[in-house]
Amino acid sequence: MSNPGVIELFGFRFANNSGTHSFRVEDNIGEAIHIHFDDIRLDLTVKEFHKLVDDTLEAITANVDVKGFDAGKCDPLFLFEVAQCLPWLREVKTEYMPVKDIIVDTLDNNGKRVYRNIKHSRVVKALHGDHAENDKHRQQNLIGLNNRQRLFRIFNSIKENGYPFKDEHILLFNEQNIVRDGQHKAAVIYVLSPDAVIPIQRWIFQNNLFSVSNPVYSSD
Image (cartoon, rainbow, N blue to C red; front, top):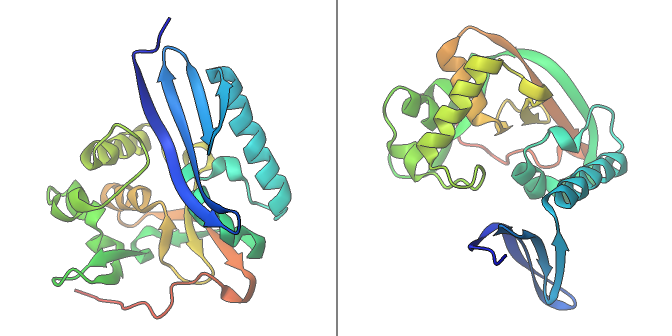
């Protein structure tokens, strides 16, 4: 049967010494999963695609070879974004901290990025009914859902399943308390239980690489 449509699940372009290249993954509805790299196309069944994903995550985990690191427990898009940092990862620590001490990136009145306490998070504001900043925030995961739908899906998941669900933790880098992945989780926990003390993961990089440089903090 012919497929009724194609959904691009993921795609990007990049350049190296051999030129400019493209990579994309398509869901050919009613047919298969296609992986395209330039003019090469790999046809997979859904089962084969999931097996390839699982094998790839296992290979990444084995190659990083840092105790406590598990690529399979990372958000896939976050993992893609930090992939180039992983050769410098030296330690993964799980520790407990008050959720109210977590810091997030927000926008000031001039639209400039500043760092504030979680209670000023765009996500916390949205959970309290002020969706303006969160609605404008560009997000790539959970394809097919808008920002409000993403937020309430995570909210309902934490209410029903608790945190950390499937051992997926809020992530911080080095000794900074700035959340690098998991702002939605942190905001939901803060709204549900502002005095909660929760487990988080710190990824410690060689020479404190990949910390936020000269962050501008704001208390208002």
